Image (spheres, rainbow, N blue to C red):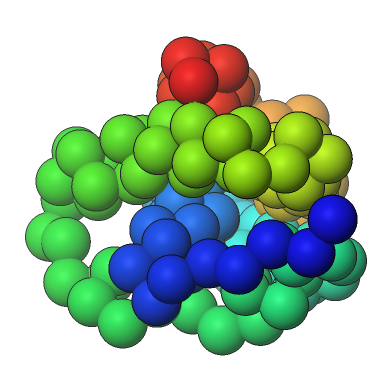
Length: 134
């Protein structure tokens, strides 16, 4: 099933997915944030389907948040809204989006010199909870 997303819907998906990269990278700042961000970005831009087409570019205005908390205030609700929207339109694309974000989080953890920190693990839990809240 081909779905059509409005510009606003696409923006919400981009805020959610690229914001998840930013949140997990911020949580891993004590390790190697550059490697975490690189690995996560590669995972995100490797997405396929409608989600893959939408996520090829980062959203404007996402990186204006001055704190991780302010960023989370934008991103976590966008994750839930994205899942709700995609579940209404196409369950397969909703699953694709969820798996893409989770792989992105996992990839960021592999960008660390050692095991992901407790801070990264907690941020991953918050992202997963936002995805599952839909």
